[in-house]
Image (tube, rainbow, N blue to C red; front, top):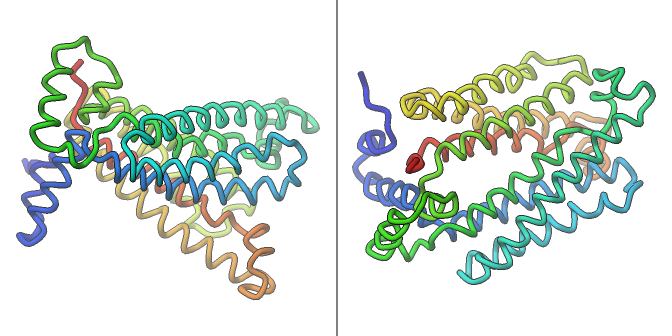
Length: 315
């Protein structure tokens, strides 16, 4: 049977790219990619911030608390850049901002649940009010970039790779297992699988009721709905099984990432096909298909792929 572990797959990379790929994998598996993760936090926070900004604009910012994720996404983006340049800022500013943003996502989830309950019929008419009310899982997906920020704040810097990183890992091996130490040395595959499953289910639910609104006009709209149980199931099955983590998980994660990219293309096309098209970009972005939503699904695939590349926890 073909070996499908990350180390084995690196050997299949073309010779000119094999050494860089091996170095990159080593950095990921030993937790020495804080700078890279900080840049990823910057990018994902910008995207999720723009998504929530125009979703709340459509809601007229009827509650002042609706400004909080917009403001925090900007602050988190700045913190991501600061974490790229400074180890100290990554451990302080980025970590603190990420935890606050995560808390804001949970509070937002509560407000969205309350918003659905306040619509006519409330939770006695769940399908109608889930579809027509505030997107219930959107605040949790907003927390994805914050979660990455928390992870980044505990990682080691790229320049720590080598003897310094090995020394840190040797010291942590003597202590009682702790999730922060596991993150610091790149051993958090199971933990990341749990987050991947939760994020995928939330994103899939968002895709379902968003596409339900236009009655699944295009067959391709079913693709994220079909991929959701596949990726979530692979992530959950990877918690007890290393074999699943090395086989089904990367395939499902790769499909989700590709689906998110293709979905973004369809959403852009949908915006351009609206009345006025590119001549009325702001209006059509606000009231057309949510342009960044498919990228949130792709982000779940990215988390799954990252989990595949990680080493498993010590316990």
